[in-house]
Length: 119
Length: 115
Image (cartoon, one colour):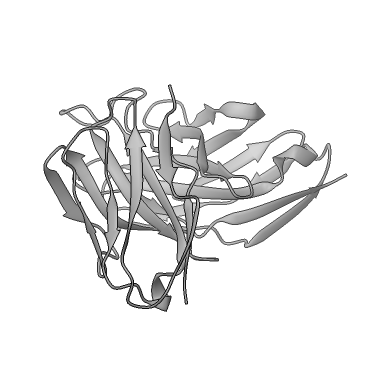
C-alpha cells in the first residue's frame, strides 16, 4: 500500500512552459485534492474532486487545470507557467461517506510533494 | 467563511518540558478540527482530529488536543517534549454542518525543541 504518490519531486520550468504534476492513490479514496504551500502561508486549495469525472475549483484555481478519469489518478496541469506558481504542491486524498464525515473517514492523507520553480 | 489562526509563528521549548501549540478557528456551523505535522521535505502527516464527543482528543506520538467551544480553540499539547517533535504544525478546520465546505488550514507554527 503506497498511499499517495507524486511525481516529479522537483522541477524547474521556464516562464510560459507547461507541465503536468502526477498524483495517484491506492486507498480507493473518493476525494482527492491539490494544494500549494507558500512560505508562511499554510496550504491553499487549488482544485478538488469528489469522484471520477467530477472536479471543482478551490481557493486559488487560476493558471491550473485538473482531470479525474479514474479513482486513482488526479493530475494537475500548468499551462503557461509563471513565477507566481513557484511553490510546493501537495496532493491529498480522503474517503467521505455520502451521509457526511463519520468515524475515521474524512482524514486527508498527503503525498510527499513536488517542489516547482518557475524562472 | 471558515478561518483558522495560529497566533505563534514559532514556539521554542526545552526537551522534557510540556508544549502547547495554539489554534483558534471560525466556522458558521459546528467544527471538525484536525492537527497535522510536517517534517522537513515531507508531506503532512495526520496527528489527531475532533469530530464530536469528548473534548480531549488523544493522537499519535503522545500528542493531545482540547476542544473548547466557548473559546473556539483547539490547542495541541504534549506533556513532555522530545527533540524529534521539532517540526511544522498545522491546524485545519471544516464546517461539519456545511458538507460542501472544504478544509481550511492555518499558516503553521514551527516548533523547536531544544536539547
